[in-house]
Length: 277
Image 1 (cartoon, rainbow, N blue to C red):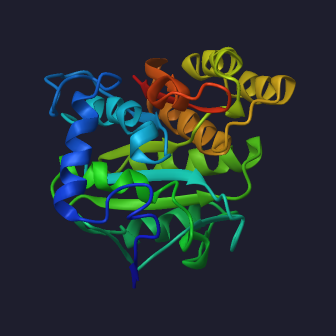
Image 2: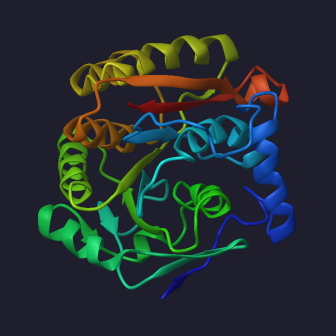
């Protein structure tokens, strides 16, 4: 089964040459890392948090995460994101499938998918859950641009994002990662449709416990400050998995809002790239 792209032509170009150039431009953008991958680094990175808006808005911030992992050696990219449409299963992966973008095909690791649902009762294999959403799709062209075509993916989409769900997902992923070279990508934007300065303040409050790998405080801040981060469960699952695997801290690579990048600061969305080391 091939999962066709649903936001090509809107969130990113649907022409392969244009998409290739767009991804490359994100790395050299003034809000990007100003370097082309691969990064010359031997530091181990367990996972990243990465935004998922249209490339003109969040692509330069997203490229920081991909630059950081570009020299890492892994065979499987686990991509976790929110189910914006809330369709299908509460938490879903898929099996016997491939994801298509204008840059090519990425194969789902069915072996890892089967292992995942055996490890976690709350996760289903459900293609329909993935059929409309962009949160995982927009990560794949970055992976295809940087890494070999034999890199496999494990997509996980979460309509249910409470701390129990995130814990189940995170623990299951870390079990898989103990036997397979794995990179974990948590896909989320931060504050939605607030004034620019307010978004910056809100998001820094939420990013603080992320960097400390403090999942309980993360959920407390989310509730107390009413932070409208869409993929909070994906962030938390990434934190939990990375901590299980040996991560000691997160590091903020870049943060900006849509207002910082394209103007119009009255109503913005916040984007952050974070690595776990």
